[in-house]
Image (cartoon, rainbow, N blue to C red; front, top):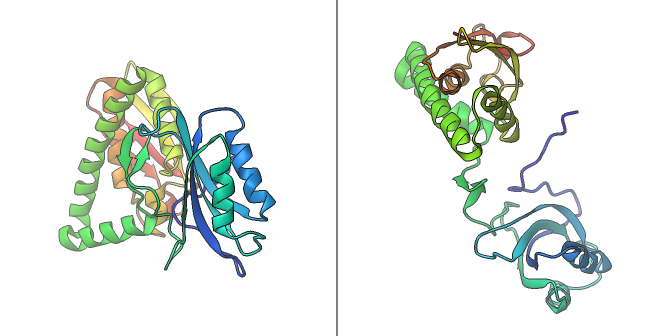
Length: 259
């Protein structure tokens, strides 16, 4: 089963709701979040969406951050804050009214693991590449995206190999994990031959194909290059990739042949 995930960066506010942001620094002990959540529940405050994570600035604590709906609250936020601060597990409390738009803006920067990251919606990729296409023409854009993708794929493969000590098929499986975790697509290894340095990879719901929309030709040149760069590290030998199927031109999924 594949369950979609909505990143905690912008909220969806339903009619009648009044959303606020809350951020708590909690002691790293069992039950800390339960105690804090009970204070909100007792005040009839609904927890909408959020996340828990650790940061280096608080070595013995965790951070819980969320959007909450206070439209039916039986206590004001000052009262709720006082109750939260009275708990033995709470180290700090921050409330923020997300105006004028419901963006999560308490936290900065954003990290993917231990690496600073940025969120770029699919539409931004489309706008960026459409602008490049006007500059380079379609044939030039293909080359730019493919070569850029190769460099990124090589970089990511080396980083994953260094971070987790992965090689060979395990490193390729990490590619599938990373792609799904970050929203690039669902990658499956259809076949692989280490002696011949060849492989066929399937990418379902590839972000690049979805961003371009319907086209009479294959469009996933960045993903194609990324696959070639990544597999060059896996095989420890330069390889190239060809897209043989593409979601954008009506195929069930995107398929890349590496050799």
